[in-house]
Image (tube, rainbow, N blue to C red; front, side, top):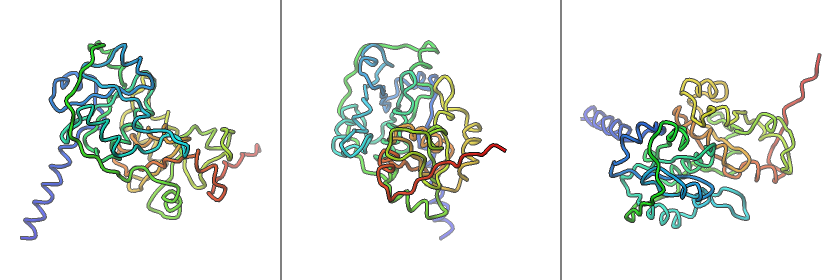
Length: 292
C-alpha cells in the first residue's frame, strides 16, 4: 500500500510540474496562442504613451510602480495585497489564467521585477516572459494595434510569498553554507567605485554576477547553456541564491535567469539603498591589485 501511495504522489507531483507554464516564450509561440481563452497579456512600460501608440492585440497596460511601489522607506517595495488583487482582477486574471509579460525596448529589468512580484504573489507556474519583448515581436512582423480590449473582471486570489527577503534574511544566509548572496551590479560598483550611497563596495561575502551579462543585444535572455556558464562559478545548483542590486530592480534579471536554471531564488528588496545606510551591516571593497 505504501508503495502504491508513493507512486500516486509521484504521479501527482509530475502532473503539477507538467502544468506549469514555461518561464520564457517566443513571439511565435505567443502568436500561435493569441486566442487562447486563459491568456492575459501585460504590456510593461514606464510610460503609457508607448502602450497607447501600439501594443500586442488584447494586451493590458501595466505600469511597474503599480506592483512595485516606491515609498519613504525605499524604492520598489512589495505591493499592498488588496491593491494588487484589485489590479490583476481588473486585467481579467483568474485562477487558471496564463499571464504573459512583455517589455518595450531595453526595459527588461523592470519587467523581470514584475515577473518576480507575480511569483511572490502566489502565481508561480502561471507567468511567462516574452523573450526579446515587443521589439522582437515587431521584428518578426507580427501584428500590433492601438485598440484597447476591456476584459471581464477576474477572480484571482493572491497571497504574500517568500521570494522577497529582508536584511535579516541576508545576514542569516551569510552565516550558513546553504545559500549564496549575489550582487547583480556592474563589477566596478561591486569593487567599490562611488555610487552616491553612504557606503561603497558590496555586502561582505557576496559574489558578483552582473545582470547585463545575462541578456544579449536584442534584450533576450541568453541560452540556458550560456546562463549556466555564468552561474556555475558563482553558485552550485543546490545552493539557494539571494540576489540584490541598487534598489531591487536589475537583480530581478538575475532572479529570472536563476529560475530558468532551476535555482531556488530570492531577492533582497532593500538592496544597497538600505544596506549601505546601516553602519552595523557588513560591507567590503575588492582589494586593489598591486602591480608587480
